[in-house]
Image (tube, rainbow, N blue to C red):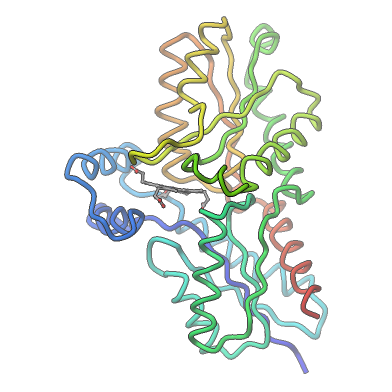
Length: 311
Ligand code: FEC
């Protein structure tokens, strides 16, 4: 008999339009509404990228293509259905689980569209998915914790790094700093030995080695506007320091993100770029993976590996 496998493909979420920004922000802030000032600032960031983040449409396309890929490659005794669930906006993680329950499946695999594990990111998706599955009587969810060294993911980023390096002239390349960046998290994750910083460095190191580049460093980006300290240095500070050191070219590879969304289109393309250009630095960032074949391959391989652990 053909085994029915649900893949819960999970992503951050985004407001569908400007009217939903407040509800989205309140959800991110664990039910605490933002001040009018913070809300206005967030709305201004969405307006600056055209009013809407492409995160949901890209994630929906990834879900569709991943389902096709899994069914093309898989052996005949498994049939995959991919259900997209968001942490902070509809369709929520529980909605994806509902769909899987209604379809009646024999096994479920959860994977997040974020390659690196943190108790505060992937750990939360996992908890929510498992809780929803448990409450609704879905098969136990086997979770992919991280896929930050998956070959196809590294291949895709290596290709993008090489494409971006070609945008600098020879003189700029002589004095170019390569940055790798990811969403910052509150510094307290270090107290629990969270693997997030280490996994990000592993990805960065592997990529720098692949392209034979030694002048690189890691920078954090997009820290939340909360009172507690966040991991640093922030990419904006790093740009200022590099300007003082005389760098005139920076290439940033946001390894922690897979798609275009607010934190890439605003924080890097608008804010970081402006900060660099004000100091006469040529700033580029690698193109997002979005619906790239190699991203789909990395996700598919991770799902197959997870399935082997339950077979
Ligand atoms: O395009 C969009 O509309 C959504 C872009 C977006 C992505 C994203 C990914 C991650 N976040 C992570 C951690 C945190 C923590 C907080 C937090 C806050 C925000 C705020 C916005 C936001 N994040 Fe985000 N994140 C995106 C957007 N993030 C907007 C509010 C910022 C503010 O305070 O003004 C703090 C709240 C909390 O305690 O939860 C922590 C991590 C990722 C990467 C992994 C993933 O995608 O899940 C980690 C995309």
